[in-house]
Length: 124
Picture 1 (cartoon, rainbow, N blue to C red):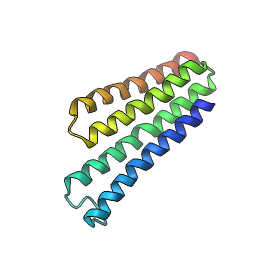
Picture 2: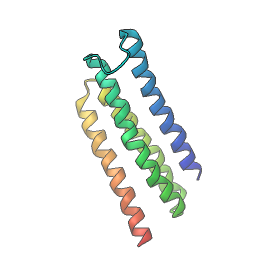
Picture 3: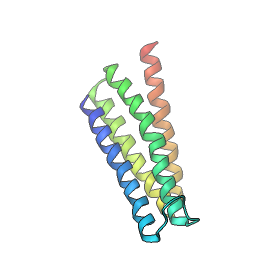
Picture 4: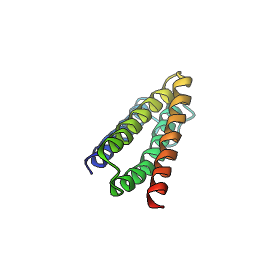
């Protein structure tokens, strides 16, 4: 259960950091609502939302894996590996490093699919 708790803390910190980046840009550009058709704000908003779109569902996968008692090594890889990939993806979205974004997106999908397969195999 410790890895799930660590995952939640790290995931929420990542989401909060990205939200703070959106707020920083909004304040500096005085954009109260929407994106103001300002490219850097659009990128920051998308990086924030994309992280939410993946961190929250993977928390459900990790929660299920914890309850299937698959072992601490596997849970550690899932927890820290996924958070690492999401950090990499956030960097790729906020910088011109498009290859980093592509690789981290593929790894994100890989973690999600493997997590679901592990659940299905162990429940079956």
